[in-house]
Image (cartoon, rainbow, N blue to C red; front, side, top):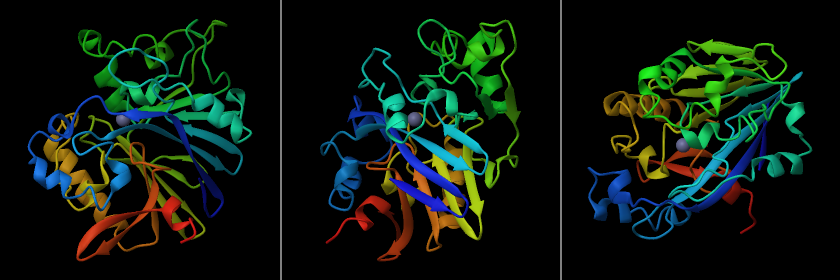
Length: 289
Ligand SMILES: [Zn+2]
């Protein structure tokens, strides 16, 4: 799925899909099962079963004037309870993009399903010509030496950006505060709560707008229920406030919302249906009938 926002093209990419290994009771521990299953008829694709959400590792390619940008590098083939990824580079190739074409890699946050193919198993950068951008808040949180045991994926992936390149040079690493224009029409927008420095990207070009909200929302039901706290939100109160602010920004406006873990392309719009915000995926809207 590709959507054009003025001069910026947004391509939804996927590193892999499967069934999330933890049930809704673990993902949303404070929400009653009946409250969750009530949404199954509204969002059937966002339920692998009545008890389990699907897993989908979404990334976005942004073709901005003069810059090719990748938002998040997927999960890769890490082992563990989660379904494997590893399809991102093939998906990029299917859109005619090779790793060396990427000018800038932006990390929405430093969880393992968003940074997994930054370096190959030999420690070489996958996107050999790219600069990198992440918030200073996430960088400091996840790369702090005293937390290395808590975040074991960091050392072999984004943590390598602090070290020398294989050629002895340095990686170009931009630590963001939020508000920066990272490419023409592509702006960093702080969206904290899922992680301390979780980042959304606001794409604004020629009067059109998209908001790539990454993991601010895990499930589309949270558009109507931003108070549903995901057990992997690092600061629940801040995450709820971020979700409310995003809903206010996109609801009933012609703003495309992108989410990494929503089903399909993860791209949609949000409109009031029976008085509640409802995610309307672009994929479904583009299907006949
Ligand atoms: Zn994620």
